[in-house]
Figure (cartoon, rainbow, N blue to C red):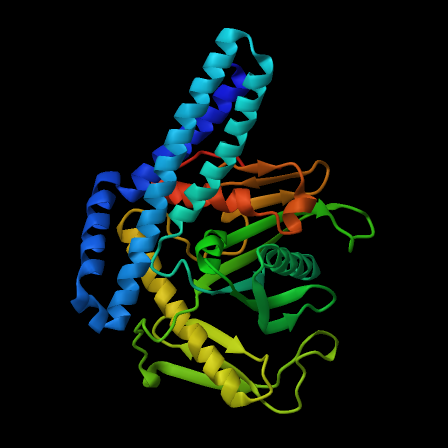
Length: 375
């Protein structure tokens, strides 16, 4: 089999192996049988909430198992077709087989990522918080670029983005911003973006045209509904109000309508200023706090299971998860997975799927990759 075809076969087999490992194949088959039996039990439908949960789990498992079997069957058939075409010297048929393998490889990667989004809150909407690191205008401009990058990524996926909180930079960019991203699996995809992001470029704010390194952090946590219980003791909260502010007059208010809530035991701070009503801002900030506390619990569970734990660290050198280099060469490099792109313009325009897919896969395999940062 020619090298191009073999590369596609290897990619498909790698995706299938990860899928089977993630699903715990034999256990998944048994679980699907159990769920099918429960669906046949009329007593289940007396409890709509439980029935909905059972049907959701059943659909997820059935789709993942069916997709895996379909890909395995098509891989076998296509590989056999290519071998037959090569044996008979039919170059046209062999080319068609290679093209079919390429399509199948792309599908296998998409199905793999879809199956990996099976976490407790992966299907939920998400909050995405961006904070500029030390460095003044440079870092604030970089934080603004990140805000645009994630907005564009969400829009490319047909998701809606709302600006929940915004603090403009002194000369450019932002000091901080919180986005609410609404869409299917928004948290599942975005959760792997938590961490410090590093930018290397020739500064547009430096008259000497020197190269600067800037840092900003991204923090992602899921929107949670009333079905998820998070206990909050009101006596452990400090609630402050302040006057909303924003770029170009947007979000500016003449009353102290913006709300900041501090959870004293954990030090978590959330704030909201996008509504003119203090009550609405307080309710949204409270929702953010519930989400942050829930995300903290999820992270602790992952840490206990020796999985990668996305946590806040210092916004500076040695803590970055990804580097974006614009000068003197162009490269984006993820320091967890080794995934790279030589088109940083595309990445900053929201082309993040390959980085997210690699990080999601690594959470399953648990394989640490030694990656050197770029200069």
